[in-house]
Structure formats: structure tokens, C-alpha cells
Image 1 (tube, rainbow, N blue to C red):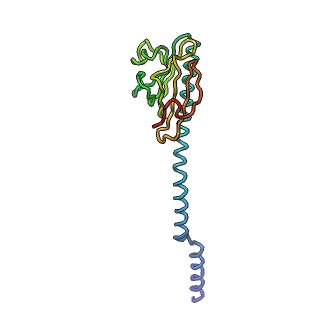
Image 2 (cartoon, rainbow, N blue to C red; image 1 turned 180 degrees about the vertical axis):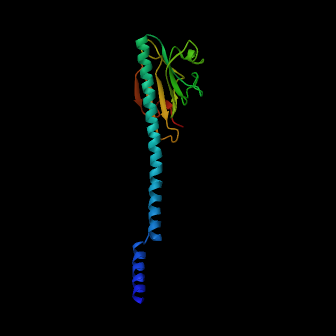
Image 3 (tube, rainbow, N blue to C red; image 1 turned 120 degrees about the vertical axis):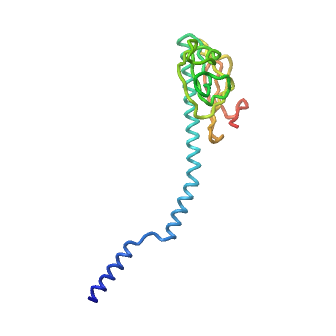
Length: 188
């Protein structure tokens, strides 16, 4: 009997050492390392997301302007790109394009009314994700694909002003990247 008690004690002693977990020091070191990594990674991730948002908006706006220009040339009519109202039912008379934009056939003045009228044919719409500032309230291409005057387009990230892209639209309707701050535009 005494021998079976000694064996049970020996086995239970081995089982306890085999089932050993983390010590408090090991756990605290692991938590400290995770805290350091997360303080470095989270801001970098947010900056990455903001830069991607700005790049995506710049590409979408560039595509909309190129589409409007080519449509004006192929249809032989004036095609405009104008900022959307908050509810997306018409264009607004503003230089802040934060709600997105619409490509419409006709003048911007016609697009200020409701899109459901017969005067306006909406070709494309895009709801905004990044902040967009344009030096003019709308952009109209004539039947030759030209605009009335050169203009600047500035796309800013909503979260941080460090993420931005600036484009210039020449009088012949061509878009080109510009240095940030050209023309006195800034992301605030």
C-alpha cells in the first residue's frame, strides 16, 4: 500500500510539471511586445488606408474626366463634370466636390436642376470618399475636347492632410500631375 502511494505521488508530480503554463514574467513580456508592435503598426496602417483612398479617388476622377472629354468629342456636344449635391439628385454650384461628381451631357447650369428632368442626361456618377477641391465649380469639355481655362484639382485624405494628390487640367483637356501646393491649394 505504501508503495502505491509513493507511485501515485510520483506520477502526480510528473503530471503537474508536464502541465506547467506560462509564468507571469513571460506573459508580461509577451503583452509588452504586442503593445509596442500595435503602437507602431496601427498609425502606419491608417496612413496606408488614407493614401489608398486618395489614390483611388484620383484615379476615378481622372477616368471620369477622360470619359467626359472623349464623350464630348465623339458626340460633338458639350459634356460637363460637376459636383454632386448631398442627396445625389443634382449638381451643386460649389468648388468642394466631397459628395462625388457626375458626368452629364450639357452645361453645368442645366445640371443644377434635378437630374430627372429631360434636359440632363447623366452618363456616370461617383460618390466621394476623399476630399476633393477643384479651382472651378464645374468642368465642361466642348466638342473638340477642350475646356475654357486651365484648372487645378486637389484630392486630400479625410483622415490626414499628409495624403494628397494634385492634378492640373490644361486648356486642351489633358490631365497631368502637379507638385502639391501649386496654385496656392492645400489640404488645410
